Image (cartoon, rainbow, N blue to C red):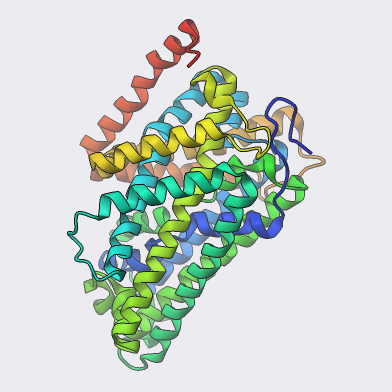
Length: 439
């Protein structure tokens, strides 16, 4: 039961599996660390809560848009496919170029390094141990090996680690609520302050909510995709928003706004206060679990994009290969893992991710804009429809534009380098099309 004879993917995932991909792709280490950054940029508990609520609405808008796109084109490749059909192969290639060179690979490298740091900490080793890089590489290689055996193997890992990371979130919430009277949680609902700094506070919020598009990359392996993809995206996004709001309420309840803003690791602080050294070890394990699960999603999802690019002839032809038995994009999978390993060992992934931020968000806006193309060409009958069209995609694109502008103002040098990386993909695209790399 394959997606098409061309790709040979098999539809083996149900709604629960797809929902776990959505939740696991969004909730990472950020829920344990980012709330402090948001609180430090706001002036009250109410404003902090508002920021996370607004971020949830923005992410839900994006989920609705991607739900309709996934239902219209339930095949591997996600945003690359939508951009190729709506705006042509060059735009699609540039999207894939930045994803391959930096975003997927850099994210895997960065998060694998974080996993290794917390894993070593659990083993009683200091944070500066030289074992962190080899442990990170080992995690990437292990996950690539698991995903080689197909989407069911990767999904099983994802389901287990997503449930475990949700359990870690529950533990943090319980710890925060148990510390009664420590902070100013009673003031969460007070009158909201008006401040220009709110936009700056929204940046880490929106980054924490990103990741819902991973499911679209594996749409060719989801059963009954016209129904399953929208359900998974909406359910997953609502679950993530609830987790973020409840977790932040717990942080504010226990630490207060000032305490949260001053904390470098709020989840660890809560668990340490509530349960002592055992709590600190539990949250370290929770972060390790969460980061390991994210690496798994990025590998299994990103490899599908590069497989489709290989089939289109704008990437190594060998990357188009699908394993006959396991139905996995084995060559693309190991290629992505290999590049992530190189970035991990080089230590350059952090700076690369800073450079690629603008390209990532521009890509999100472009993918959102493809909905206008599909509505104009195919109408709105017979598929899941994102509500509020055309206002919803317009608002989404405008919000993304605001994020890009804010990032450019905050880091103009990184923005220019990021645009240069995107521009460098243009001659690469034409060289690939002309010389037909067959490797």
